[in-house]
Image 1 (cartoon, rainbow, N blue to C red):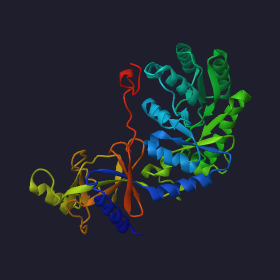
Image 2 (image 1 turned 90 degrees about the vertical axis):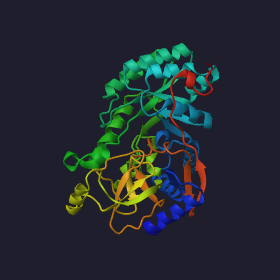
Image 3 (image 1 turned 45 degrees about the vertical axis):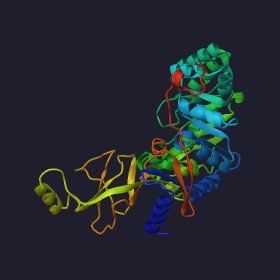
Image 4 (image 1 turned 90 degrees about the horizontal axis):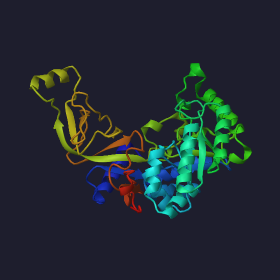
Length: 401
């Protein structure tokens, strides 16, 4: 199917469903194909952990976990974590970054005792050094629970984490000595791999080095503390034909494939998420100010002769249809009525839909209200997003305050 036919079908489906404003659309058929490709691309015995920030919708997460046969989730925001724990009583959470101890304290103080115990039982918090271990131990003592922890280790990305096997051994000793922390493993994120240039060893060389570093970190852990060895990410998940010591791989954005994930390793996957919005006004393009400025810039080929103003705009997204539609540095960005330049032969009309591909999913999917599901030429449902909320105890749903 050509781009014109595909986006024409999507436009008709949105109109039939009464969606005439800015809308986030997920192509369910493409999503399912992507899920199957990733599922088949992972060696048996290696578990996939679904990244909730990249797929911030409870029905979307449920669909993905069911298709992949996993109940493991990686979480990054406490308000989202609470929603996920409530929605999936059998889910197991690994945090993808260390949480500030003050934020955790406020979060837990807003919960009933049973909810605190459930959080402690089903969540693995990340520690990146001795100070964080001490903070987590104090938090566990204050709430009379045992907290599960894993270590963030630096396998080459240099975004923080324990730097050496010796540091891991020291941290493990401190965690076990606390008596209130249960050490379960470690996490080594390696999203930098595809960006390593050839003169520095290239992606293949860095991938090999990352696996060796991860193995050394694991070796420094007591054998009983190696239940979780987490690595991978959306850009690298399909490169783990040999997972090395990793027991699980994290993935999220790859399933819907925003533009930041247009990488060679994900070439088999299709874009499955789009922003659709009406063109409010299709116009003969004019710059603000004196008419002669427009004529000069158009004569020099610096400004289009045709354009449109959109319903909304200024998203983390790139234009994809109509082909040749682009932004204008002269008009700049607008969240209200974004100007887009159009190619001379474009037959776009007022109220026709235009389409963008998000550059990422984690900060975009919850901006548009219910997500429209496109399948077999029609909108077949709507999935509400999870919207990250306040960490104030007074604003935590179901809090005891």
